[in-house]
Image 1 (cartoon, rainbow, N blue to C red):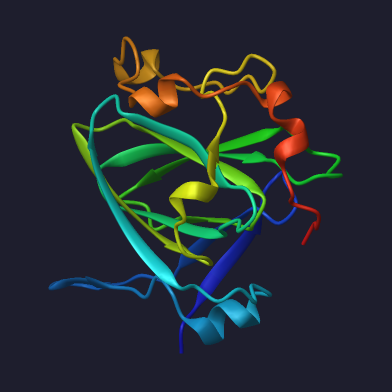
Image 2 (image 1 turned 135 degrees about the vertical axis):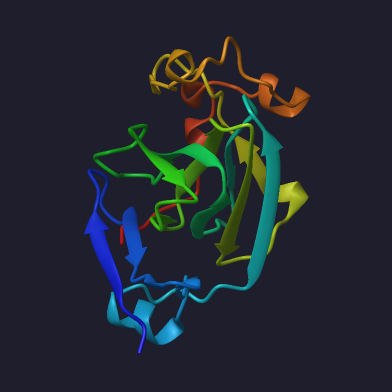
Length: 193
């Protein structure tokens, strides 16, 4: 039987999940997902796609979301370390535009669960990092959207200096994202969990 611990964050529905890790002289074993266990935690979403991202130190990806077919995500770091960020984009949420950040590392089994309606981004803090995430809907390039990583209205405190990163390494797409206030009427997320 799988054993997971669920911790609420400051944004309702956004959760930290920690699996039990069994260790001995050979190494360790853990499950990072069990449909039955997640249902027991109150997470009733079905995951339909798994993604794997490998990036070098200083790479910042995000803040990404899908507009009409939003994706819930379960994010885990397999190797290295990242600073993972979620921004609440749910219409009508009292937390709209607020962010939460957490350090995810290979040594710490924590995972971040983002329900539909959150933008997601991460900064690689180690020499490289492998990040995997399960999604509740399929990727649709025509449906993708984004918010600037440095939007002053959101005010994410990325830990650049603490990890010796002078400036983030960005894709052209992420460099050209708009601010949240320019996008407010585009979001179709209506429900809070």
